[in-house]
Image (cartoon, rainbow, N blue to C red; front, side):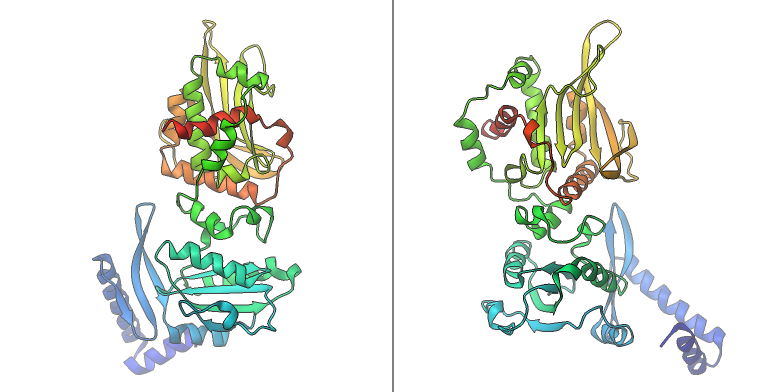
Length: 391
C-alpha cells in the first residue's frame, strides 16, 4: 500500500481528507509526546516508537514489527533468498544447517532485543562461533540466523546491498561502524576478528593482553641507534608514555597488528630542516597517523608539538587547530594539531577524537598491510610496550 492508497483509505474512513490529516497529526503528536517524556509506544504488529541518544541529541526511533517487516519484504524482497535457522543455546550450528549447504555466503544475525547484524563469510560455522563469543560478552543473545549461499567474488556487493536493504527498513544495525570502510574479508580479519573491529569502533576496550608482547620486549636489548638518541632526551619518559597511550587507545590489538599494519619510527628524516625535526612518527598502512615534531623557536629554544590524524568529521576540538589534508592512498583526513605533550594527552582524553582516530586506523588497516615494515623501530616499540609494566 503506497502513500496515495493510505490517504484514500483514511479519507474514506474519516469522511474527508481534512479529518484524515487531523487524525494522523493527532497520532503523531501523541507518539512524539510520549517518547519525548521518556516513554515508548508499541503498536502490535506494526512496531515500536522510542528514542535513542547520540552525541547528546535524542532522536525518535522506529523499530518495525513482524507484520510490518513481512509486508515490506513481500513488496521488496531482500537481495538473496535467505534461509532462517533458530539458534538454541548449547546446540551447535552444524547440527542445524544442512551438511550439504555451502558455508560461503551472506548471513544476518537477529538478536533478542530486535537488532540485526549483516556480514559475509567463507566459513559460516567459524564466523558464527566468533559472533556468539563476542556478543555474548556484551549481553546480546543471538536468537535467529539468516543465511544465503553466494559466490566469493560477489560477497562484497551482496553484503552492501543486504546492509542497505535492512537499513532502509528501519532495522537497528549493530555493524554500522564498518559501513563506509573497505568491505570484504581481508588480511586484517585474519588478525582482528570483524566483530572485534566493530566493538573497537563503537568504543569497546578490545582484547589488549600485552603479556606475551612485554615478555618478548624484555628478552631483547633496545639498542637501535636512533632509539638510543631519542631515549637520551630528558623528556623521553613523557614521550614514551604518550606513545603508549596512543597505541593502546587507537590501534586495535596493537601487539598483533604491529609491523604488518602499523609501524613506529624514531627520529625519521622526513621533512627535516634547520627549524624543524620529527621525533617520532606512527604510520598505519603507509599513512602517518601520529607525528611528534620539535620546532626551533625564535629565541633558539626547541618546543614539542605535532598532529594526530583522524577520520574526517565535523566535531570541534576545543583548543586545537584542525586542518583537512589529503594523502595519496586516502581521500582525506583531519589533522588535529597539538602543542606540547600535554596537548597530545588532552586529545587522547577526548572520546570524539579517539573514536575518529580509531576509525581512520581501522579503515587504513582494512586496505591491507603496509610497506613500511622495514622502517619499524623495534627498540622503540619494545620500550613503549614495556610501559605497561610501570602502570
